[in-house]
Image 1 (cartoon, rainbow, N blue to C red):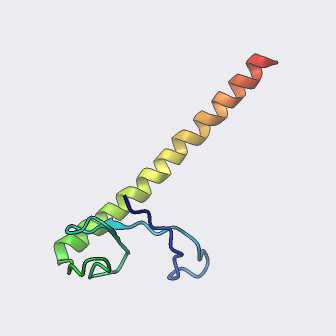
Image 2: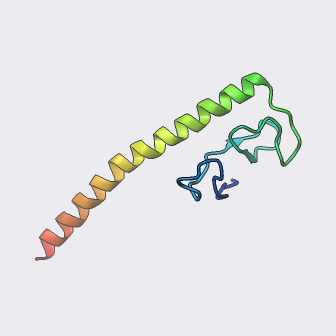
Length: 87
């Protein structure tokens, strides 16, 4: 799995925000938002693949937000319960 941790230079206010990539249908390495050609294998993304890429990016961002909304309160509850039990 290829993790994309390059800085997002498109957004000046948050220059080091992680960009959500889309796996290329041919080589399975991630491309960046707005790319029409995979920089790894040179595969040209057709319009349907670009729409799928946009949907994939949106679903990954939503999944991250939902996960954060579940994990943070759950971890706070576990730590609170743990410290309540040991005191």
